[in-house]
Length: 114
Length: 117
Image 1 (tube, rainbow over the protein chains, first blue to last red):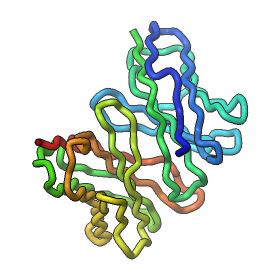
Image 2: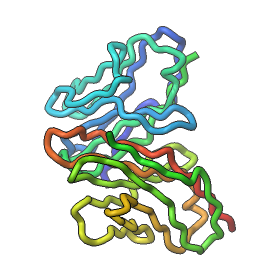
Image 3: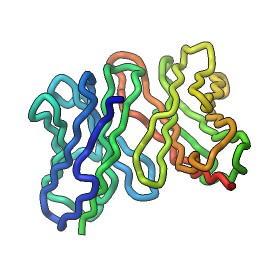
Image 4: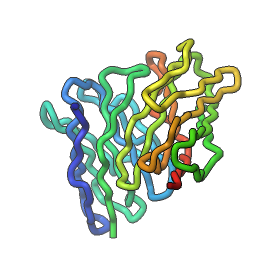
C-alpha cells in the first residue's frame, strides 16, 4: 500500500541553524501539506501546496519557513533559522485531490532545537 | 471559525469492551468533512475514518464506526471489541469541502485511550 515517507525521523539542531525536512508524498497525490505538533499539544496546520505553489498557509508559517517541490517526488519544508520553540513533530501529508479527500500522513520528523 | 472539541483527555477501557470517543464541532460551513486519526506512542498519524456532512449513513470501517449527529454537531468514534493495540491518542479533525475554502484540517486536543487487559 502506498504511503507517505519522511526523512529524517529525528533531527537535532542548534538554535539559529537551517534545517530541511523531507517528504515523499504518495505518487498520484496532488495536494501536499505540512503540520506540526508541539509535544503534548494540538496538531497545527502550517501550509498546503498545490500545482507548485502555496495554496494556503497559517500564521505560524512566517518568513522563516519555506516549502519546495524540487523534483517530481520530494516535498520539503525549510526552516531558515531555527528557534527553541520550533521543536516539535513535523508531519507531511498528501491527498489525491482537494475537497473532502482524506489526507494521509507520514510518520513525522521529530525536530529538537537546542 | 471552525473548532473541534474533545472533552475526554483520557479514558481507560477493559479489553474487548466497546468504547466511544466524543467529538463535537463548530462550523459555519454547509459542507464539511470529519476525520478521525490514531496516534500510537510511536508518533505516526494513522487515518481511521471519514464522514462527509451530507452523507446520510454513518461511516464504518471494520471495528470503527462514526456516530454522526449533525443537529448536535457531534461525530463520536465508536471502537467495537477493543484490543490492546487500540491504546493510543485519538484525534478528531474537520475541514471544509467547498471550493475556495480553507482545506486545512482543524484538530481537536485528542483523547488518550488506554486499553486494560
